[in-house]
Image (cartoon, rainbow, N blue to C red; front, side, top):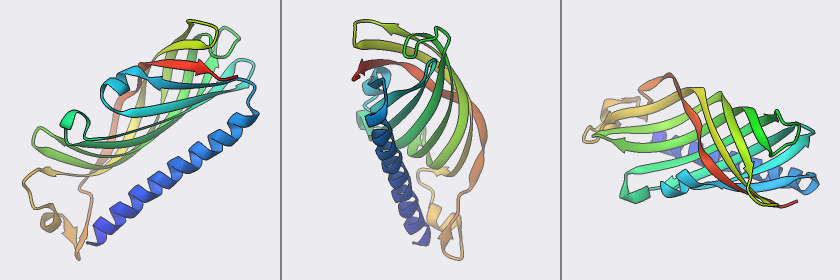
Length: 197
């Protein structure tokens, strides 16, 4: 019971952080000299809603903040909510054009059932991205990117038919039973961007 309340509060806390960062991004966007919004096509194909805002912060750099969430895509038992801020440096000397390298972070909350096991937890991490932005039309860009990072996770991991509440509780409170770190892809995709100003 206590762990359920803590998990609910953590998920609400994650939502509050995401909303706060999106509002902060919106505030910065009103002052930005160049601003683009985008969505990642592969994530949309996986029925995961996602949106990103890229804001130019200097002659050769920008900041991207992206958020994504899903709930049972394609009928699969999967819930995900993630936020990824990233700093990008463009080698061409012009933001949102040509080759770039990025350094970013990720924070996510998830509940996944996969091959008879349940993974319910949260993770955070940091990594590097390499990408290329192709200026398709005057206001339209296509952004190809791939990145890898170190992810730290803390989760409840058990078989679907286990009685997790009894097996992994201490004094009536559920505990996570798995934590660690792993090197994983953090940003892989093709984004379609529209330059607002």
